[in-house]
Image 1 (cartoon, rainbow, N blue to C red):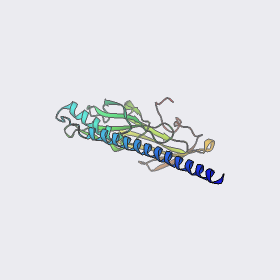
Image 2 (cartoon, rainbow, N blue to C red):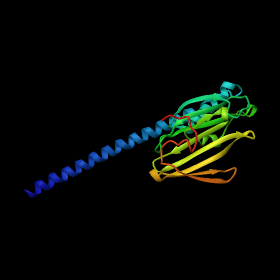
Image 3 (tube, one colour):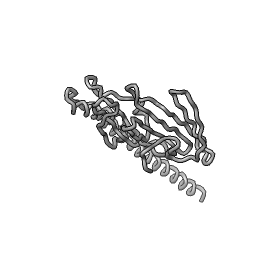
Length: 210
């Protein structure tokens, strides 16, 4: 009885190994297909051409650049409005980030430099969950995850956007301390306010409704 049992066991082991190898091969094939598909999409975006001598061509060129930078994420929408008060519309893209916790809306901002075309603004493009108060010449943003995060406030003067308040915070629930810093005056301020995933009005003003 021992020998047949041994042979049966050996057969089952070999069959299991064969199945696992088949599954592994299928998974590798899927990964290869996904990688190939991703490369094909990026290649097609890279090969696109635009007439940048026209206003529409300049817009479409920037849209394509952003699509490549965000991929595999996608742009939610893009909007034209004047962000630096020079009477010329600038281009703002919004998207929703995949990684991280908490609310995570992002943006890419391209300032219209007229003859130079659209130029990416790194500072404005770094803001998460932005709120625009253009009549006040103010922009705010924040990223508040489970463990903590940061908030920012900018105001427009001297022909540029300036950071006027930068806040860092760790989630200590009811004992949370919000550390506020004004880079222009170098002043620090600490506020004890319970942690929330959208900034309290005492910290920064927002127009986002959760």
